[in-house]
Each structure stands twice: as C-alpha cells, then as structure tokens.
Image (cartoon, rainbow, N blue to C red; front, side, top):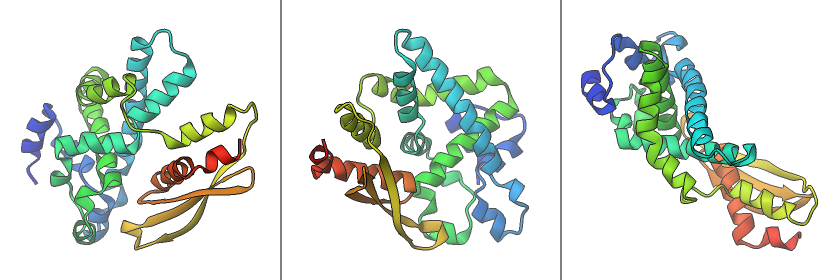
Length: 233
C-alpha cells in the first residue's frame, strides 16, 4: 500500500506513518497474518468516533445558536451516521488503501459501507494522535462541511425511525416502538439482517440491510410507505 499517496489525498502528512497504517488495517488482515488484535483499527475507530461527535457537535452548536438540544442531536446523528462516514470515505477513496484479509477482499470488503465508515473514524483518531485537536478539527470540517450544509438545509438522508416516532407521537400518546430481528443470513463478514417493526404490539413494516441499523431504517421506511404508521393513529 502507498501510504504516502494517501497522505496527499488526506492533505495531512504524518510524523508517525505507523498510525496511518494501523488506521487502515482491518481485523481480517490481522487474523490472516496472525497479528495481535491490537494491530487493527478498532481501538482507533473508538477514539475517532468520540472526536467526530465532539467536532460536529461543536460546529452545529456554533452555527445553530437558537436550536434546542433535540434538533442539534438529530442533525449530529445525520452527519455522523454510517452512511455519511462511508460517503466521506468513498470521496477519499479510502477503500483502495485498506489492509484486508483475502476473504474480506474477495467478498467486496473494499466497498462495504461499514468497513469504510470505520476506517474513516480510525483515520480521524490517527491524525489526532499524530498531531493535536486543531489539526484533526481542520480535517474533519474540511471533509464533512458539505454534509453539514446539506443537513442544515434539510437535504441530507432521511431518518425514517425518527419520522415514524414523530408521526406517532402527534396523537399525544407515547407509542411503544420496537424493532425485532427476524433472522440473519450469510457469513460473519457479509451478513444480511432482517427486521420488522412493532408498534403497541402491532406488527408493521419489514426491512433488511447489511447492518441492524440499516435494516431498522428500512423497516421504518416500509412502515411509512405501506401506510402501517397511519393505521395506528
């Protein structure tokens, strides 16, 4: 892999290039090469997630000085969701630079949304550890500002679970909404999850996805589009 080339893409040059290498190393690569689990990017992903929340949260707090906590929380969730992270990762072409095990590579891991999103969070953490908060803030805002602008304009991704919640709460009641996992198929590295939504004990729409969160969103979307939500009002 050419980390120096990826540094140009990131517009950041590392003092310790091993931090970038670890950020790009998936757990499947460590398993295949019998490396310790600590060599993969999962710990960096944990740290990057925290910094991403803080930076995006601060930016929204500053730009929306008259918005309440609920609106800020919803907007931040849109900007830092897996889909948004994967979009940033694809813009960086991060998939081309990942260290993957052969099985993960052959099953399309370089293009898998969850892997790309996790790698972006790991890169965020690696930049912080290599420099400081101001440097990582500059990187995050450079990459995420278009998504922030879209979110503020109401043009980012639809959060169907929130839409369902808000519609059902308009009746003045507190609906009991649950998402139930029906089954999961496929190998560990390429699972598909099947979920259905229940409101006040009544079965509603179903959905599937490559993560439980995606499946739940699709179940909420189906509940809206197929009219289930409006039948319980």
